[in-house]
Amino acid sequence: MVGEQPGDKEDLSGRPFVGPAGKLLDRALDDAGIDRDKVYVTNVVKHFKWRPRGKRRIHQKPNWSEMTACRPWLDAELTVIQPRVLVCLGATAAQALLGRDFRITRQRGVPIDSPLAPNVLATVHPSSILRAGDDEARREQMDEFVADLRTVAGLI
View 1 (spheres, rainbow, N blue to C red):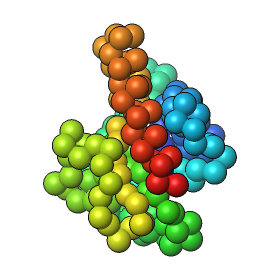
View 2: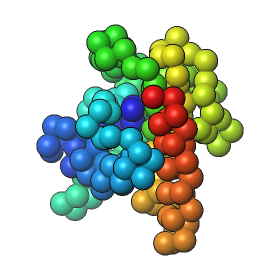
View 3: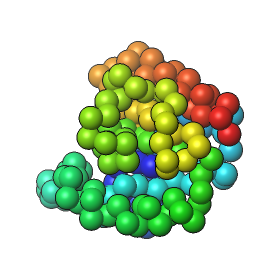
View 4: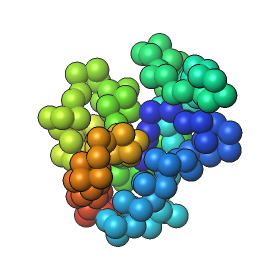
């Protein structure tokens, strides 16, 4: 599974997907019947791009040149791991790996032909669920995310 970039918690711990979005990913994987211990997670961009706001470090979206600069590390990871299923979490990861024209809104949860892995698909980043407007919207988005991950479980 490939996300956008480390968040604040990930940057501080040195491990991917350990913050709030990571906890939500863990829950969704469990709901979809995927063993989290058998999932390799990484990010397209390897550094946390942020802007200070008081004592907090606020996420800033990486630009294309940052994604391109970090791509050799991601390609090396994919060469070593040789995933049977590659899941792009969010638009940034999907566009970095599948092309700038890729749209999550049109191609979410649908297997895509790609030389990156035998099975490739994209879905939302778990952080987008956390940003949903209210509890009902979060529940609906979580259900859709778990459905995407069930598709992944069927490909494993």
